[in-house]
Image (cartoon, rainbow, N blue to C red; front, side, top):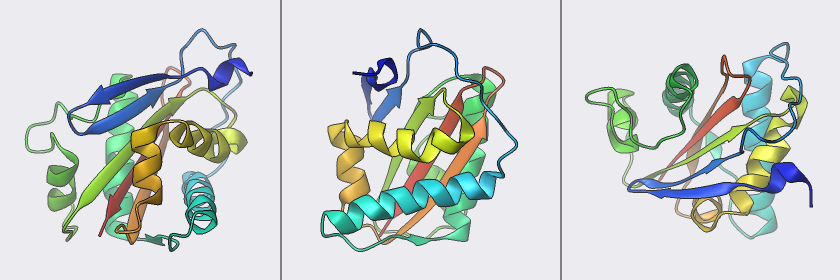
Length: 167
């Protein structure tokens, strides 16, 4: 089993999160790939999994993408992976979505922190989410119809990926 598959699953109040330990040999991270390409790659891989498991593909929602990208950038700045933000009024995914003017009846969030080449970010993110019961449930939940993905390369050379879901 490859070392990067070893992930510590941390359960939080708002869901679960995956962290790829820093003991994994460094892989040169490249920020030369446009963020939009990485976001689209994550969404395509998630939708491939959803269709494979009988759920409809998610539609990309620009407002949700902005919410996810803002939170991804916040996490990268802090070097942390946490569902609860330290920013007042934006502590929960629901608060972040409301602030971003996203209408929803239910919302979910997947987070992952990986050290990988930019090209590997979509596959590695989804592979790690698949290995986590809570993340996998969010990813395949047929109630979710819309999504947004945020991807930020942190100063620690880890990629911080946030995917938000809404019905």
